[in-house]
Image (cartoon, rainbow, N blue to C red; front, side, top):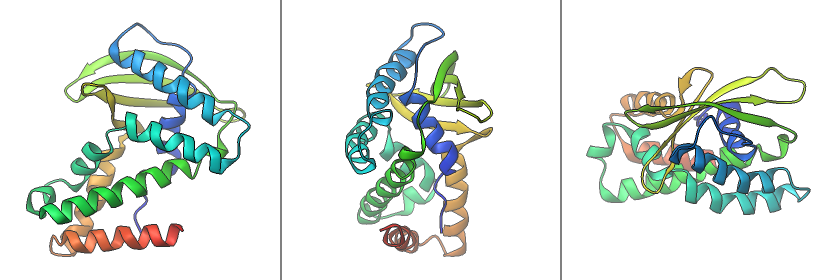
Length: 197
């Protein structure tokens, strides 16, 4: 159904946080990346079972990624037309789909190194640029947008594109084909989650 964010890019962004080892200069955004990253690193690089890792990563994601803000952005103009009940259901489903997308891939990452190269200010927040080195694979350039107070991940750029913009485009196309029916999108997300189990 929906490939909510590219699995490789989304997980690359989270794992980049998990293995952060340095910063270009001190800022709220780089401090956030290093703090969040050190906690994730302890989980991702541990010898624990994948199920244990998923359980430990879940609260870290919920505390440090603006899932509601990203979900609202992805719904775009349809957020305004959705009823409060449709919004609540959508955010709950979006949260589960996003978390599943990230946690499903955690076991595939180990021995990854990372370094922050630059931090710049954007209208959406601080853009933290990083290079991710994966053993036996090409280096990946990843950007994380950190915003809010307290700071959280509000967007991720992988493979040259904003992940929330890509998802917004997918959802908008789906909703346009279904007469803007948010219930239809929610049903599709539920089917995706049921298929995941």
